[in-house]
Length: 274
Image (tube, rainbow, N blue to C red; front, side, top):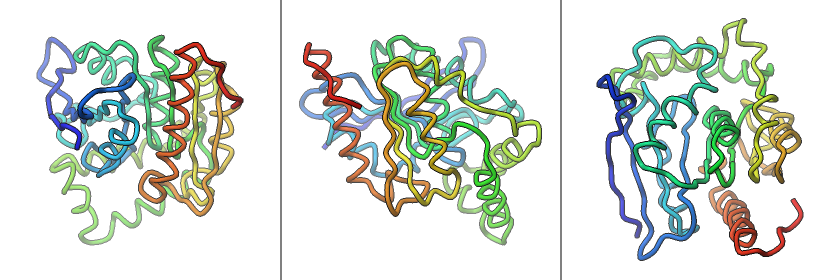
């Protein structure tokens, strides 16, 4: 079983904001760079459930997950999200993690909007060895907005906000509003990740469900077409917006295959066709 440890990472040297971090370390030895997880719009470390442990055991790598500012067990966010919040994560929350843990080489894996942020991290950090996304968006489409509207209406029903309070405490309303209000703002409609993806030079793997209620297959297509490095998309049949929960074995197989190819490249062997 992996060794599990929790810690708090200061976001800045001059304030009291901190990020909650959990680490899973394989026994007896770690193989390869750690995998850093970025959660979705309503997510947190706890909502990854048993996926990080399974990922650690399957890959033999350390897995690191953190709650972004305003989420889970991290401190509250002082304001509303700006329309640049996706790009900012590479220079704020993740930058604090990278600095505090003294990372020297890592793999970044993000779910939904966490995948968008992961792409920004991969584009910015030269020591990012691979980018993996699960159900990530690359632009705003009507399917995305329709899914958010339906979720907003569901959370308006009696007792539904309590589902978020279980994981976010008194920050639950901010978490929900940050997601809904940002994405449904007409001024956010023009957001797209194209320019960021063109700067990704490491290998990229985009996993996406063919029944994803928040994004059509056109979303992962951009993750496969725009990066400079070798990139691939996989459309998972019969899968919705949470592939690592709905089809964990398939997701782990694709991830270990990608990371295995990276080990071969690092050892001087020829990489397979993407």
